[in-house]
Every structure is written in structure tokens, then in C-alpha cells.
Length: 167
Image 1 (cartoon, rainbow, N blue to C red):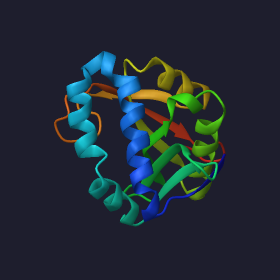
Image 2 (image 1 turned 90 degrees about the horizontal axis):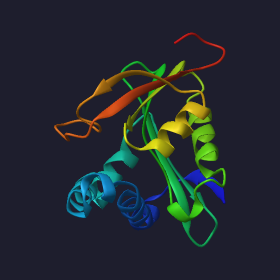
Image 3 (image 1 turned 90 degrees about the vertical axis):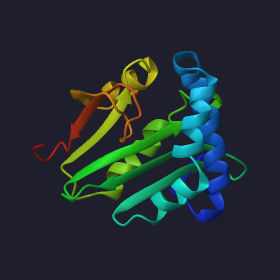
Image 4 (image 1 turned 180 degrees about the vertical axis):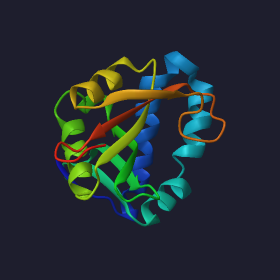
């Protein structure tokens, strides 16, 4: 797999990857119906297309030429030195093979002036919590509404400071 910037022609495959990954990760926590409702909104083609068009952002896919193994999306906040990692997902069949780390490194490289990367991670998603901890993130708070709005999904807020700058 190699990491590259996503294009509009990737959106259907990204959506399929997100829907399958969300069901594999969250059905046991929220039930298939709620996961379907969330993915219909958050991972619709229109939502993905809007993210892709956002200025000061990076939308990546991990691709082997035949299928997508993962994706990541991050955007600078109103302070360009602070980046929000909104999404980093690896297909269940491709997890634990280094794709998440590859995507995260590429996101970090895409924002060379950033001194801080922030993210939200669902508290009950133990593999994701372990991944972010292993990659230098530390918890800094909580939210009752992961992903914004009134999602009702509890999450921890995490941060990672650039090693050569203070955060």
C-alpha cells in the first residue's frame, strides 16, 4: 500500500471503507441501526466531498492499486499551527500492518508548520486509544459529542505536540 492524496473518484470507495470499518468497530457499542444512521450522515458522498474541498486540509487514502486499505482527513484550525485530525480509519482486514502509522505520518508531514495535532477518540474504542497512545498522543479532556453537533458519542480529546515545538 502507498499513501496518496484522495481524489473525487475515490469517494465511493472511501465511503464503503468507512461504512464497513464503522460497522466492524461500533456495532457492538451502538447497534447497527445507529451506526448506519451516523455513516449515512458523516460518511455520505456529499460530506466527504465537502471535506475534500476544505482549504488548509489534507484528505489521504492508502491504496494498493486495487483497493483502499485506509484513509485519513485532517484540517488546520483557525490557528494554522493547530491541526485537527478528524478521521483516520484502516479497513479491518488491513489493520495492524502499519497503514495507520503511514497515514498519520503523512498527515503530520502535510502540515509542517503545525505545532499541535488534536483529535477525538471514542472512549470505548480500545484499539484506537492504544494506537494513538503508541504514536505520541496524550489525553487532554473529554467531550460528550464526538464529531461535533449533538452526536451523543462520548470521546476523549487527545493532543500530540511537534517534537521540536511546544504545544
